[in-house]
Each structure stands twice: as structure tokens, then as C-alpha cells.
Length: 109
Ligand code: SF4
Image 1: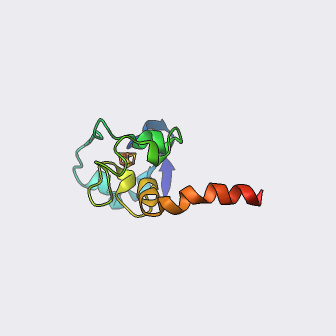
Image 2: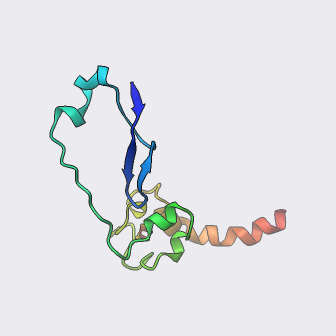
Image 3: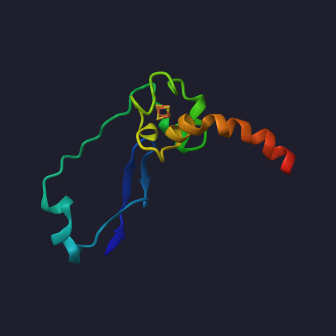
């Protein structure tokens, strides 16, 4: 049903070759991208947002300049704080437990 796209624009990561899929030609009748006019919207993240760095593992959510201040689950700036599965939302909601784990985990190893 699907085939690999030439490239795909990921929020916070930019365009990555062969990282997304699209519906094959034989199923074009079911492809909303072809059936409807979908504007190619590119919505930039706020400048303070560091979601891309979190996604790449360069920083932890706690290290984002707006974590827990301007960006919270109630008022998210970035996509990683929007849903409960987002890395930043998880750190925000369960971060105290995570911060305590490393010391306990060190004793296990
Ligand atoms: S979701 Fe919020 S706290 Fe997390 S990286 Fe993005 S802007 Fe920073």
C-alpha cells in the first residue's frame, strides 16, 4: 500500500531523505493528499523551542531553556510537550522519579 518518499519534512528535524511513506499510485483514490488541496504549510517552531535537539539526543528535556517555564503540558510551546507520550511531557510529569533512578540504578550495576 505504501512506498518510500524521496524525502519528508519532520518537525524539529528538517528534511530527511527516504524517511517517510506515501500511498502507492494504484491506491491514489484513497490518498487524501491527491484528492484534496492540501497547502504545503510549514509552521516554524518558536525560536526558544529546542525540540529538535531533544529528538536528536543532544540535550535532555530538562536542558531546554523553556522547559517547565514557558513550556508546560498546560501551555506547550513544542510538540514534545503536547501529548502525554512526548519526551518533555514525560520528563515534566515523571521527572522527579527519573532524577532519583540513576543513583539507585548505579547500585544495581
Ligand atoms: S517541548 Fe518544550 S520543553 Fe521540550 S524541547 Fe520543545 S520547547 Fe523545549
